[in-house]
Length: 245
Image (cartoon, rainbow, N blue to C red; front, top):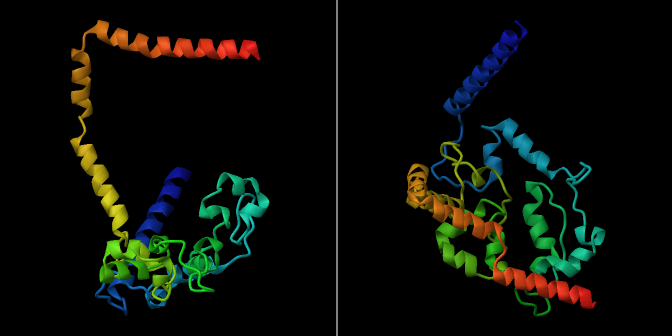
């Protein structure tokens, strides 16, 4: 009886949420024509709870065992990472991540992006670094072209990207259905799916395996488990070196 009661509560909650979603969609005050709406505050009136949750990403008071919502200098805590990342921009500055609300702020302040335009300094990063930092990015990609966005210097888009990560990064503003705003994930998924379709189906692969003579399979297995002459010679050389030392 307890199980039936709990299942009843779950079903009731699901139905209530579904009715709530339908009510919200039928009574939306802002109907958008574009899939990308960069101003996150425009979603606040129709989706108040989600918007309030998004605002909480500005909080920096949480402190966990392994991470926090604060900006912590990882290189100061683990200086060996400076050596491991030598030659990479990560060796300049690397901090623990903060919430979405701080994405653009942290990008502008971190040493990895340099200080282009200051004292004659040039860009050290490409425009690619902005890719995941806000819904202004897909707008620029649409206006300027994807290739132009990527190859431009980092500072070129600084004045254009002002709205931090928000609703339109993951939702189509017209329907609020989940939809990646950047073309990269969709291209990757299409390519992955294409490779799967071109691959040999498991049933056909098994049929091919069954057609191989047993002695050939046995020889292959022995080759995998037995060291080759080259491997044996290498081990012998290591053994002699160890003995000499």
